[in-house]
Amino acid sequence: MNWVRALVGVLVLWSSTAWGATLTWQPNHDPDLAGYRVYQCSQQPCTHLSGHVSLLATLGKTTNFNIGAPAVPHHYFVTAYDFANKESGHSNLVTFPPPLHMAPVTMTVVGHPAVGPWGMKATTTDHRDLMATVYLDGAVHHVEHTAPYSFPGDNGTTTTTERFGLGSHTVEFEFHLEGSTTAIGRACRTVHEGDPSVGAVTLTVVGHPGTGPWGVKATTTDHRDLMATVHLDGAVHHVEHTAPYSFPGDNGTMTTTELFGHGWHTVEFDFYLEGTTTKIGRCCVTVHETTS
Image 1 (cartoon, helix red, strand yellow):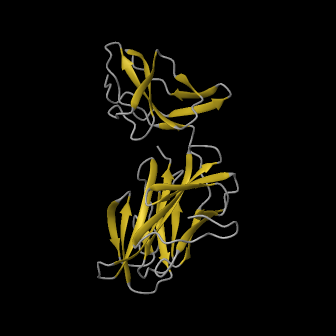
Image 2 (cartoon, helix red, strand yellow):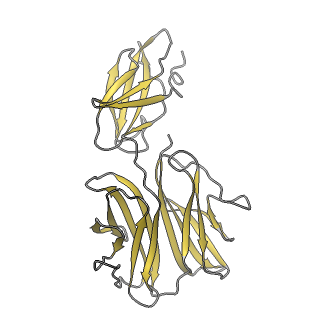
Image 3 (cartoon, one colour):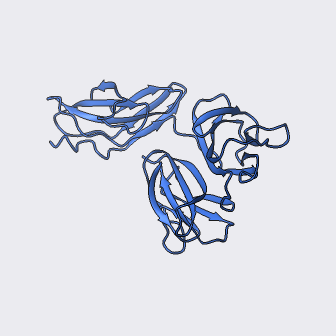
């Protein structure tokens, strides 16, 4: 028996009842099968080599296991083992509870960061009772409970404005269902205080990160000859010279799509005048890819 391949590709599913969620999988029919092991991770990547993986259960030849009702998402995979305690590779990965998705978020700069005070307004077509943790340059600024969601705050009717220091500043809204600690959506925008900035940029997610390949298209009202350095999760992905600016690329007419791995991904476009090294604007969007 080739135990390295014994369980690879086996489909793992879940069902959910009042008694909790149950993992189920296709049986292995090798004659020396002793049973299965169920593993759990609190974060990704989730493999045998992950520092945060834990053995949840060692089972006989049963092909299901009740994992209870975890309050926050965990990741699970199953392996087979034989009577000599040799273990197979792992099955595909599943997450429970499955991530919740929210409607797209639109972020609007309020004020004029190039010449004066500014702020940020976030709106969404998601009508559930939401709350947002608002970050400035990576640090928690405040928690916002009422739409439209605002930075640095609001006066009851409109977003307020302030100055935060010369240079680039990134504002991020991390959305939760009210009273929950599980993030269901994120959106961020970077502005440059004190310098002329690129015209208004609109980022559009192309495809469906919840179910398949996706990409991002950036359009701008700035008609100068621009170029953009495109980042994925903080690393340079490519340089884009032609509007509309695209990630991961385009086929001449439209943005292409790919899979980049289960979890959160942030795509950022840094804009320059073509052929220069002076940054004149930034914009970013964060999505949650949920394919295994």
